[in-house]
Length: 272
Image (cartoon, rainbow, N blue to C red):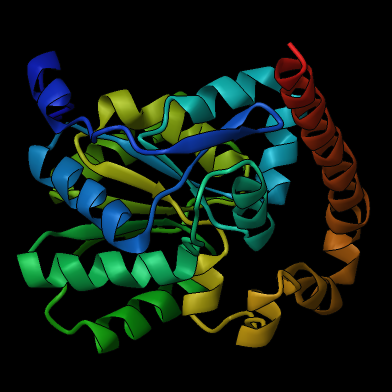
């Protein structure tokens, strides 16, 4: 299996730094669709690996509660503000930001990959969702080369099975791999396997279901107002009640505390 390039190639492909802020300790980058797509393409062409994560309140609170998970995310080449509340948080912290929504970014990366003839792959989702995803993506981007598509079992893979998956990804020639295993599983998977893979990894979570039209998407006005969580809660209340009913209020509480401490520190400096 090919694996990643040497350290010099990795350094050459490393994306340049951009503005960011730490929200409850997690670095979130003030990027854009165009900048993130450029980063993905650069890493893909360099064949030096890489990892792109999309942060929302759920991921942020997972990182807040687990410092190890937070360190893992900080190793990513980009942590984009996927959730509107994180865009607002960045702005309140003085960093101009725009949303980089996973499903939209997936489409934009596929569009650029089609133009540049960069082969892509998909890892995750159920077999039915993956079949629908491939069909719809191929319809939108007929010249896009999809060289790998695997729906892994829900259970943990054995070391032998895991090795076979990594070999299959490398042998396929995929230079961009979309990973749809859900947070935090997909981020842990990417971090554990990025050293063995020469493709760039994008953890896109629910994008598989949404682009495959297996799950309804919140209307644009709800997305603009940061109410996508309410729409999703209405669609899947039993699965998501704890995530939104517990984690959202925790996020508001702790972020309000972060803002208050920042204002108090700024006031103390001004009084000196």
